[in-house]
Length: 163
Figure (cartoon, one colour):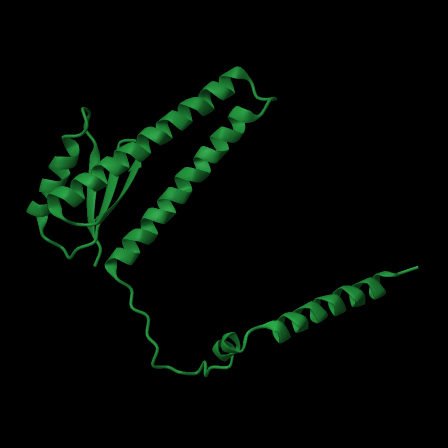
């Protein structure tokens, strides 16, 4: 009869054995990466403004995909009512429309102003982050007017310069 203590011992011993075999079977040049001096302080990491914009885009995309997955889960669940499924379907349609508008605005800003941007749309609010230094109020107003032309109703548009 194996008790818990023996089971843990066998489990950990097996893990150590597997890691040891893996270490021994690794190629020699892969081991030089691990044996390097990690206290080298001359290594610096530079962050470009486009990296910040890309990170913001990825975060927003993940948020939208999570909402879409939740709506699809409701649609595929057999226990949900027809009204809940209709609401989930409308949510999916709204999210797809939102993604399309975000892409349209980002493309328009890139083509017209030659600037990378991250656009977030929530209800009637549009937040735009541009990867450039502050260009002034007139530049921001031109972008706001260009975005507003895409909509029939009044939108609350904010511009943020990220450098």
